[in-house]
Structures are given as structure tokens and as C-alpha cells.
Image (cartoon, rainbow, N blue to C red; front, side):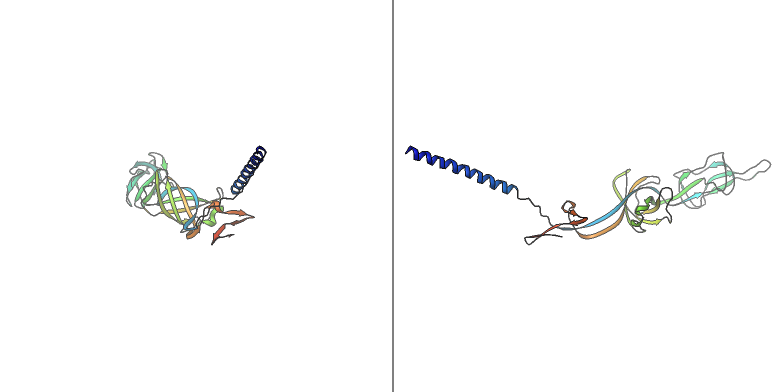
Length: 248
């Protein structure tokens, strides 16, 4: 009887051992089954942009020149002043030994705001030396330089978004209105002019960041880039539909 009980106990121990091995093998098989994440394809708008930096300038800016040569005897216009067309901004003293002339007024050719002054009391000036720069600030422009490698991505009419450190969290819209006809041979860049479409609070001389929208797609299927598989220079996606998985 004792011998029979001993044999039965050995069978029970062996059976338990085999059960543990089977459970472990099942766990290992389950652990090797890959976890696959399935997401739905959505539609969205996507844009490609070219990021550059630029300077804010007056949309219409001209230099003010004197009509005659002589000394600057007085200055009546200063940076920031709004000047009307034909308003006097300085006087030129063109007197010479033995010759006396009336002071010659320097007038603004347009209405606008003086953005720069080059005039100083006393020094000689000539008719080809500008004394002031004046611009219309009701609409501002941004001037940027486009690298020659990106020239084929930028055309007149492209939409633009502009931001400035001076006005954080604010984005202004604009449009490319002009491209210089030639590339600067020193910098290998082309100047592009952008008109801002609204009153921005920006000031001429400010530094801004510009995103030129070079390409735009509306309501197209999009997926997260991490699901794209690159192989032999081609991009693939695994598609799951009606219980079938295939590549596209």
C-alpha cells in the first residue's frame, strides 16, 4: 500500500512539472505575438513652408534731396515726424564769398513719415546727397533674401505668415508682391518684397520671421509619419481593411 502511494505521488509531481512547462511555453508564445496599432486615416490641410528672416520697411519710401549745394543752415524735420507733400524739412545756405543768396528750402516730394535723417547742421551737402528718407507707413512691407537654391519655390502671389519677437503670439498675413530680377552675386540671394495685409503695429526697422507658403494641399488623406516605412527609396504603409492587411 505504501509502495502504491509512493508511485502515485511521483506521477503527481511529474504531472505538475509538465503542466508548469506547458504554461511557460504558452506564455512565451503569447509574448512573441506582435502588438499592432491600427489608426484611421484622416483628411486635413497640409502646407510646405520656406522659413526666412527679414526687415520691416515702409511700403513707399523715397529720399529727399536738396535742389542746390551748400551748408545745411537749419533742420525742421526729424525722424518720426509726419510731413505733408511740399513741406519744408530743411534749409540750405548757398552763400559764397562776395555772393549772397536767399536760403534754399528742401521740400518733401510726398506725404509721409520721416524714417531716417542724414542731415547735420553745418557740413556741406550737394544735390546728389539725400538729407532724409520718408515713407508711407499706412501699409508696411517686409524685405527678405531668398537663397538661390530655393528660388523655384517662391513666386509672386505666394501667401506669407509673419511673426515678430516684439509682438509674441501674434501672426500677420501677407503676400509676395515683387522679386528682384537678378541674384546678388555676393550673397547668392534674391530680394523678395512682401506686403502686409493689415495694420500690424510693426515699425520700420523691426526684425521679423517669415514663413512663405510654397505649397498647399486642401483636405488630403494624412497619417502620422511614424507609420511610414521607407524601403529602397520608396515609402510604404500597411493597410488594414475587412480583416486583410496589405501594403500600399
